[in-house]
Figure 1 (spheres, helix red, strand yellow):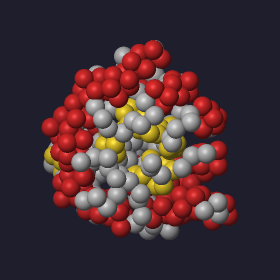
Figure 2 (cartoon, rainbow, N blue to C red):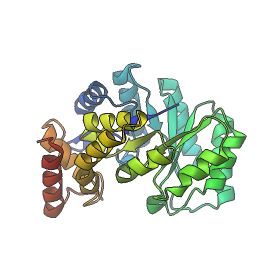
Figure 3 (cartoon, rainbow, N blue to C red):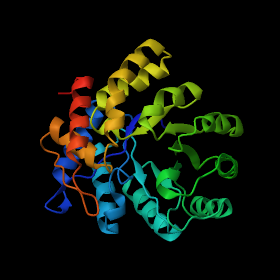
Figure 4 (tube, helix red, strand yellow):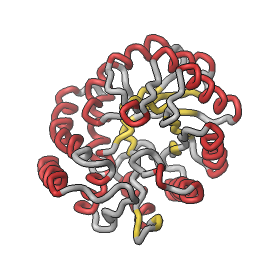
Length: 293
């Protein structure tokens, strides 16, 4: 079962290539500051512009550098079921503990298609799966009844969800509709407090790239039912949560990391470009508010 603060890691680039040395430092820094697990090759990791070889190398380096200190939930999602299976097969072989599988994007499958997609993957590889629902990016919405049905069919493999639907009522829908152990993880940092109050157990976070210690402390306060401390930490982080999306993600996140750590560059891959001056100003103000600079 996964819980706590789990960063969806950026993929550092230098001169167009994966910056392996910077990524290894990022993994160490995350673990040292309390991150409970790591997600390489998610949306924040710019997986959509990685070749399959690069995608696999990022996961492999993450597993190597984590060295068993925390679990690695490898981003394996694709709008091609066979390519998702390819990513999962590699990730399992190199030692990742689970696969994060986004709902297929662009081709817009029906709920029946989503059931068939995730069922095929669960049937063809023995690896824990964390579903990922982010309809704002994929257009496809993984409905609660589909999530519950998948968990019913595959209670040992469908172990959780990263829910970025923005619909907090779904936490209760999933909690009441799923009898097997099932980790509900927020995919929206700014909603993590009410999400946890409804039954969530953590967050797969963009902000935790930049503020891992504060995010870990916030999640621990939620786990301890220390609402006063959780609110105080949430208030410190709240402007940063929104600043991370003042421009196309992960542009603001990489800019923030370049402010906090010079060894992470702002470099992104086209069609993404460095964030605007207004986004930089929002990030700067949020970093000051959180006490990170």
